[in-house]
Amino acid sequence: MLIDSPRLRLFVGAALISLSPVWVALVNVSPTTSGFYRVAFGAAGLSLYLLVRGRRLNFSAYVWGMLIVAAVFFALDLWFWHRSINFVGPGLSTLLANFQVFIMTLAGVVFFHQQPRRTQLVAIPLALLGLGLIVGFDWRGLAADYRLGVIFGLLTAVAYAGYLLSMRQLRMQAEHALPVREVAVMSLMASVLLAAAAFAEGESLLIPTFKDAGWLLAYGLVSHSLGMIFIASSLPQVTTAEAGLALLLQPTLSFAWDVLFFARPMTALELTGAAIALFAIWLGARRGSQKP
Image (cartoon, rainbow, N blue to C red; front, side, top):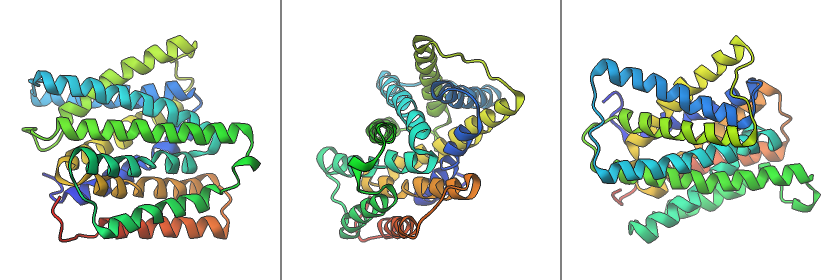
């Protein structure tokens, strides 16, 4: 395998996916359309790779079923998240989506009997504090559209956790180290669901310019295909709490890209929140005596 450490694969995948809101902000298409092309271009690129390598989709009925579940969760994830980006911006929307850490940790305790380390129990509320400093706590003072964007962001977290848990389960007995086939099939299924959503909403799937096509292609091939492969390949080898915490690198970097690329104003309080979030990621990712 290109990267042997599952934790390092998680971080690389999170870093690649952290660029996703940048691509979304650069294109002039609807949220559903950008989500469709993320998975459609990703599926096309991975399918071409599988065709060249002669890989067959010899999945069990269980894996096919879990792929359908994963695709539904992922389509919902993109549908909610891209709308959140429009209302609150790419950095904050991705931070909200990564409330998945709480759902992942709870699922690990309830379903997989994984007890989080003490440092992880400290890291999770620290991450929440960092997020709170960036978002702000004055809910009533926020505009209606802004509040709607926060709600969409939190719904994204639920769908994202559902996707991660589904992919974790279907990868538990996988024969291949890299989940190229699984991500390709999941992406194809999700693209069909998003195309249906665009049709129901009366949204056009036409790409207005070659420049937009280039950004969407980068979105699908770089952030989606490579990012999701690195993340999915690591999930069976780490606890759900570790996965949730490590993936908090994604919103932290997305917030940084928002500041660097789109000149997002940043206060000292927001900078403090970002620093706390980074510290929480480091704390939660430290190796402990507990085995995954």
